[in-house]
Each structure stands twice: as structure tokens, then as C-alpha cells.
Image (tube, rainbow, N blue to C red):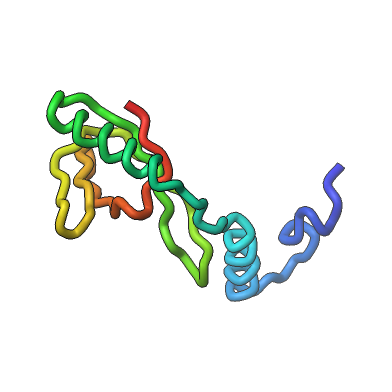
Length: 113
């Protein structure tokens, strides 16, 4: 059975939209994580895989951390072809059938080829 605390909106009849929005925002804030620490050798292996994927023209899966509030954020994952590596701004352009995403190399957590 579901307790009243687990299902707050079914337990009460009248909930203002502002209350509901605040409650949902609090639940989203609980899902935020801090940025994991990545060693220098892991960054170098990420760069090697990305450059190899760009030259050999194969798809990779990149996982990166996106800042939301304070020192917390979410992790995002995207699969696609490495279209461009901008060494000056340290960004990677990842291309899929539906989307194009610029990802900062400093926020990359994992790369799978």
C-alpha cells in the first residue's frame, strides 16, 4: 500500500500549482550529483578515443556532467559521430541523426568506442 507521504497529491484534494511545482523541484534537486573526479591519464585516453573516432569515422558514446546549481549537476549521455574537435576551446562536436551537441572536454566523464 502507498502511504500518504509517498503520494502527497492523491492524499490532499487541493494543491496549488505553485506548491506542486515546488515539490517537484525539490524531488529534482535530490537527483543532482557532484562532478566526479577524473584523473589526467583518463582525460588523455578520452582524447585519444575521440581523435581516433573522428579519423576512423565511427560512433562513440560520451557521458558528461552538466552543471545545474551550486556544485551539483546531472550526467548526460549521447551516442553519435565525432564531427569536430576544437582544441582551442576544448570542445567536441557530437553529431547524431536528430541533434548536434557541443560538449566541453573538461566535463567528459566517460567515452566508449
